[in-house]
Image (cartoon, rainbow, N blue to C red; front, side, top):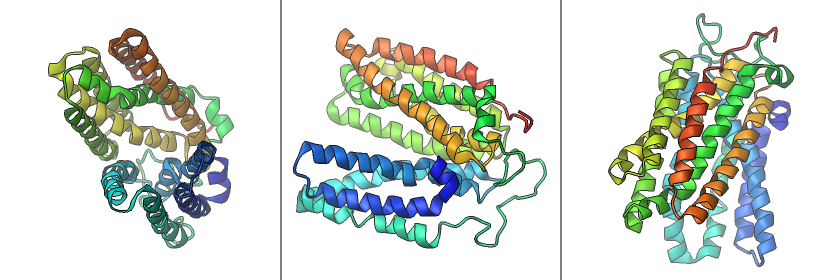
Length: 339
């Protein structure tokens, strides 16, 4: 977050692309488990340098109006990558072996490098104004708005910690379901192929949700859209907790749709409520909370399964956490500059 605010997104995109290419190429020549761990540390740095927060801030600087839609479209890329690359990589491995495949996909980040070099510009650098700058009635704050809050000011608001809590509670549930859904579906009687299709369906719903709720946020009250988004995911969590095989399709549809929408709405709420001037640090703190809680969710969900032989308790815990997230989200409001 500090690097985003100090260096800007262009420098980080370029650095991230170079690190990603180097990490892929290194994987092709890995010879020990220690080397694997070191390469994964580089992957973590790549996510910091050119991951979601960088993309959200870069897009947000170009849009005051239509910002929700723009962020939603950008975040759809996080799902498209997961849809397009695994089949391609599987085919390459079958034809060339995994080591040579890693050498080949080390070329892929060149596209990201070119984007960083030639396209990643702020409106000010391009001599343009963000879309909707100076418009009246917009909830969004433009970059450099005097109403922007610093990280210190933001952390002194109930709204900030409420948003961070919502992120933590929902990411606990998200990663808990991601790590367990295929095994859960098999426990309910699905064969491995059907379970994989069920997981893919949830990913598809997440892709739709990322765009849909961002689109709606530009056309309706953003706070209302945020709450409806949480209700959709909450409904999916309750259906999962019912352990009813007949409700599984509805459960993963609602949960995936709500989960995808939250990816967008959490970013929209953070940027529009606290501003862009210090968004790197603000989003960085929120990301620290959601990543930590998400890791706990993934681990604890499977620990509880190991003890009980069922995901029933894990999913009931998630349903309770989603209720807490919904009521906590009611406290998220746009704070005043005098905070």
